[in-house]
Image (cartoon, rainbow, N blue to C red; front, side):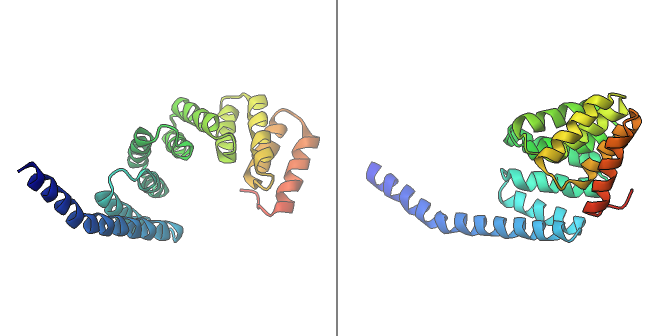
Length: 197
C-alpha cells in the first residue's frame, strides 16, 4: 500500500512537471512583455503584463519592482510605493527597489522617508549614482549645500557622464558662492549635452 502511494505521488509529480515549466515560460514571457512595454513608455501595457507575470509567479521580485516603476512613471506614487514595498519584503537587499521607493516618497514630498530610503540604497549598492544624486537634492532643499555637493560629487565619481549630477552640483556651488566650480560644472553639462532644465 505504501509503495502504491509513493508511486502515485511520483506519477502525479511527473505529470505536473510540464505544467510547472509551461507556467514558468508563460511568466517569463509576460515579464518580458512588461519590460518591452516599459521600454516603450507604454505604462498601462507594462502594468498589465507585470500583473500577469505575478499571477503566474507571485514571488517575482523584479516584476513587483518594474510594476512599481511603471506606476511611478504614471505619477501613481501610492501604487508605486506599494509595489516597491512588496519587492523589498521579498528581497530586503534589493537596492534598486529602495531607489524607486525613495523617488516615490520624494514625489509625494515625504523628504524624510526619501532620504532614509536613498541612504539605504547607497548602503546596499554604492554604485547607484542616482541614489547619491537624489539624496543630494534633498540635502540641497534642506539647505545642506556641502552635503549636497558631496553627494553630487560621489554620483559623478560613480558615473562620470551623469549630466544631471553636474548640473545639480553646479547649482549647489552657485548657492555657496563658488562661481569657478559652478562654471566648470555648467561647462561640463554643455559638453555632455544637457540643455539647462
